[in-house]
Amino acid sequence: MGIKEMFSLARVPSILMLGAIYVTYVLIGGVVFWELEGDLGQKDISRLLLKKKRVLMTYTCLNQEGLEEVAQIVQEASKVGLSLKGNYTTDGFWKFTSSAVFAATVVTTIG
Image 1 (cartoon, one colour):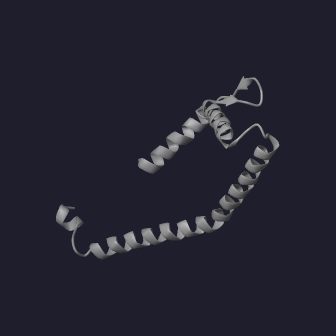
Image 2 (spheres, helix red, strand yellow):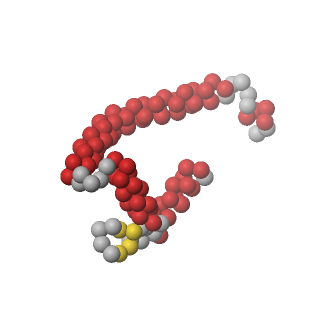
Image 3 (cartoon, one colour):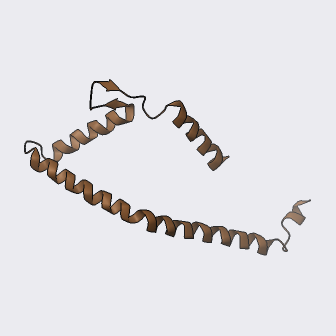
């Protein structure tokens, strides 16, 4: 099959139809996930803002700036696998299982 046959005008409508179906599928999927997950995100935000307010009221020596600094430390510790609950470290994110899943995701997305 030559280039001319591959890109003949007879195939253009079917290619455009497949493209339109794909775009429609993606848009419908986006709406479905937005409807299913959107409220959960808002509830989580409201719950966390309430917890933040309680922490600032309970620990009066801690202001907004101090809380942000503590949050930064906790976030950095979590990224490298350090647990602040006790005197030990975890395996972190890049264990073999999560690395294999990431590799599979890269292959299926890019490959």
